[in-house]
Image 1 (spheres, protein in one colour):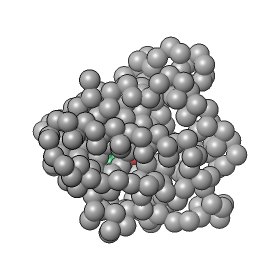
Image 2 (cartoon, rainbow, N blue to C red):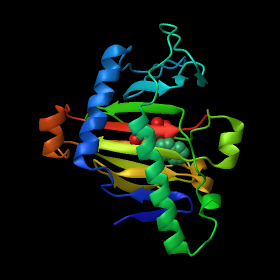
Image 3 (spheres, rainbow, N blue to C red):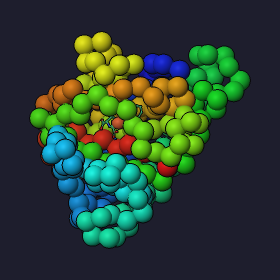
Image 4 (cartoon, rainbow, N blue to C red):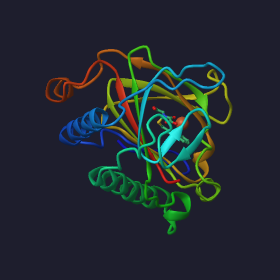
Length: 227
Ligand code: MD3
Ligand code: FE
């Protein structure tokens, strides 16, 4: 069920239980209410992102494309990353290490997929018309990028068509459907790939999430990183 897609890139299918997913959605909603909530980043170029964003831990400033302690909108610290999120991230990395060790028969799995202690959580919400063009994430610190510290992503709600590849080329890119509960880990060499979301698949979310967490149509994605 789980798969190693590239060295350091591991997909844990349906990894989060419905209960864990419902808790994550509720915590995100509470944080959105007690903070500035979701906003749609607009770059200095005028381009607007086709998703809604909220930060926990450090704040990603989309105008300067830098991480900062405080949000420029209100000068406040974003909410901190809930402990239960950090525990899930570290459990996922540990399970990915087990999968790599078993499939690749290597002794030093932490060289292929380094450990990480997240201080950034970016929550993205995609409506059914949401998308994200192919890009690389390179705003983290030089040390973090050099070490190949992983990005860990949680998908919740509607499924997405996820693209990744070595070039900024949607035709050449590999495609994977990310479903609710999937955890995708990008560490080591795979940290430097181009990636994006081509489209959201409407009405594909588990019914339990819609009923119990009152999730609206669309996809919630959490990415965890270490600055
Ligand atoms: C591969 N988010 O937040 S998650 C992002 O579905 C981002 O919201 C997408 O790309 C989303 O920057 C994709 C998977 C992901 C996240 C970060 C990566 C893959 C990555 C960084 C490096 C390589
Ligand atoms: Fe990204």
